[in-house]
Length: 259
Image 1 (cartoon, rainbow, N blue to C red):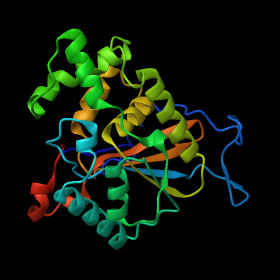
Image 2: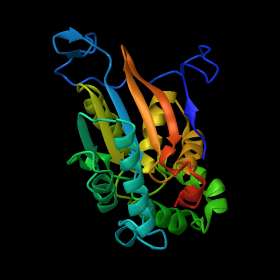
Image 3: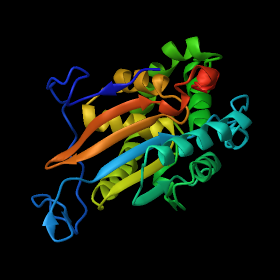
């Protein structure tokens, strides 16, 4: 696990902020105009993204994978308790429509989420099968294998070298851009419960990463990890990446999972 913060360092010194992606602004708010809340111009919309809890990682397809393990339910409940004890209040709650998203949002218990299919994960198993069948690259069998495998998968997908897959890389990128853009245009603090691929693509857009950089982020994102964004006049900035404060105590270190 690692956590990245930008803006103010742990020593209180100002640090350089990363480049940010200019998300497309909905037609109700012209690109040249700041968001408005309460009759006053404001750029204080915040977004917290949370990856779902541990799913059924032993599955061999999307249907079998798409439900939380017992530990995944615990991770979600612990994060929800952390939000409550720290006084975290969300004005808006969103999730994908996948079962693992809905179950994680229920465990966090921060409000009934507005479910949006644009926040769903990409079809990993179908992409992986296409990479094997069309290019002879076998699926990864463990976390160490993923270090070499994920960059290959992302590179082939982005280059449109995987035929017959449910969506193109460009389509995935566009739907994440559109969804997060719309949510960022709303007032107050928003919670998004989603998957690692969605979070990774969001960070790619903000930080201008290539396929290899996005792959490294995907491999780092932990179950029920917390990622924070804030609105700027011309886009979104990242405040926090891959935080797991609810798993900080030594008796919960066993619950720090990636798959």
